[in-house]
Image (cartoon, rainbow, N blue to C red):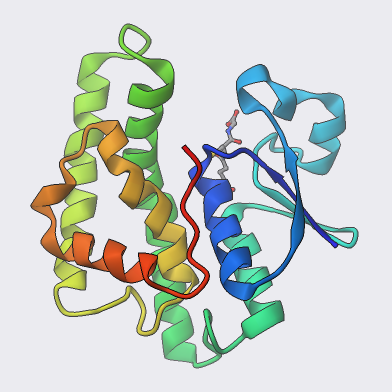
Length: 201
Ligand SMILES: N[C@@H](CCC(=O)N[C@@H](CS)C(=O)NCC(=O)O)C(=O)O
């Protein structure tokens, strides 16, 4: 049985739950309360020395880093559905997975973290404004791409699942998503995929 070390409000954990749901795989959830520091315990550090969630435990095979988990699960369970063995399609999927980690998360996820979890007075206003400006550029890049493409890398794939959480939640970081028509269309398309689940709020 798969075990997922998880927190309901984490976008990185949500993307793994999203894929597991699409794949129809049952799993056990182990809540790690990062707001109480449960990811910093000695016990959890043995599971992930980087002290972050999500962590997947597939019958003793332990894997951390959310995008690695997506690739592993898609490869194992549906190599041709949410992933592709075609070198070009695989390259494009990787491109958007990396874009997610280098552009979506550092801007949109961090802006959400500031506004939703830290609250005013706990961050510098100009830092948030910088993240929002860069987040706007990230959303524009996605919007332009999605004006000609239904999904990020051909068919619906782990690339979409990887970017979806923090794009969809970016309004919590103060982004005005209504300015990005094609991003909105894409959000609706993702939400209409079989097995789609919402993040818990
Ligand atoms: N690159 C990691 C990032 C994971 C991450 O930042 N997880 C957050 C929750 S969304 C976390 O564990 N934060 C606790 C901390 O950094 O102290 C991944 O994609 O799995």
